[in-house]
Length: 368
Ligand SMILES: [Zn+2]
Image (cartoon, rainbow, N blue to C red; front, top):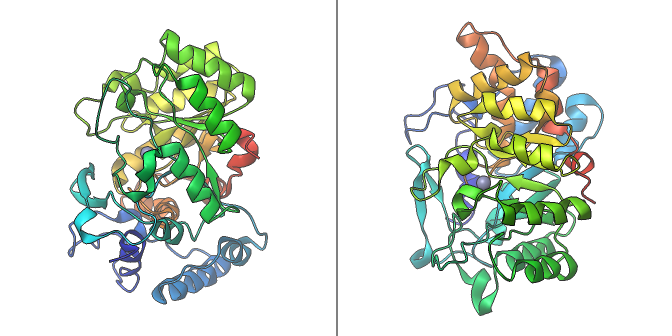
C-alpha cells in the first residue's frame, strides 16, 4: 500500500477507454489520458505509457525532449506535505472523500509517497497550512504523523522534505497573521529553514484576507520579494468561510500590493470567471490549475474562459498533492482537446496547454 497515491493511477494505463473509465472506483477520470495528435507526440505518449506500465515514470526532461526536442522544466507550485517519515502504519491511515466528490484521498503519506508522485516534475513548492492560533487542535487539511513529533511544525516538515530531495523540493512556510508569534516564526522559517515563499488559506485559517493583520504580513512579504500561494475557491470544510476564499477579494490585495507575487489556487473553482478577471488585470497575480481535471465540465469551462480572455499565459502548473498527482494533471490538461471534440465544443489550443505545463514558475515568481 505504500505509494498508493501514485501507483493507483498507473493501474489504469492498460484500459482502452480514454474518457469514461470509471467502473472500478466510480471516479470520473475524463482527464486521465490524452490523445495522440502528431508523430512526435505519439511516440512520446507510447514511451510514457510503456514507462508507466513498468510502474516508473519517465523523467520530465526526457519526456519533453521527445515531445518538443527541447528539454523544459515542469514546476508543481502547489503540493501539501507528507505526514510520515517512513511507511505509514495501518493504524495511522486516514482518508477523506469530499475533496474529490466521493473519491478517496489518502491524508497520511510518507516522504517516499511524495517523491514517487513527484517523479514527473522537476521542482515543487511544498507547504502546510498554519493552524488557527485560537486553539484548533486538529491540523488543517494535513493529517498528522511522526514528522511533527518532538514539537516540530509544518514549516519544519517542509524543510525536512527539502532535505530529502534538495534539487526538487522548494520549502514554503505557512503563518497565521493573527498569531502573536508570527514575525518570529517568519524569521525562523525564512532565515533558518530556507523557506522561499508562503502558503495561506484564509478560509481554512479563518482570517480576513483584506484585514489589517493580513496586510501587515503582505507588506513584509512584498518587501522581501516572497510569493504567496493562496487557497482560492470552495472547500468542503464546514467552518472555513467561503467569503475569505472568493477570488474577487484578491483584487483588493493586488491593488494594495502591486509588487507582491500572488498565485490563486485551483483557478478559483468554481469561480474560475472571477479568478480570470483578477489575474488578467494584475501583472503579478497568477492562477494555478491544480485539482481541476476530475471535474471535466468545470475544468473545460474555466479553461475556455481563460483562453477567450487571453489569460492562459497567467496559469501555472500544479497538482494539490495528495489530492491529485502531477501526472494526472498533465494528462488532464492534454486531454482537454479530446473532451472538446467528443462533446462538440470549442477546444483550447494545444500550444497554450503545453505552455502551462512547462511554464517556469520559478522565474515568474522570482523563486531561486
Ligand atoms: Zn491545496
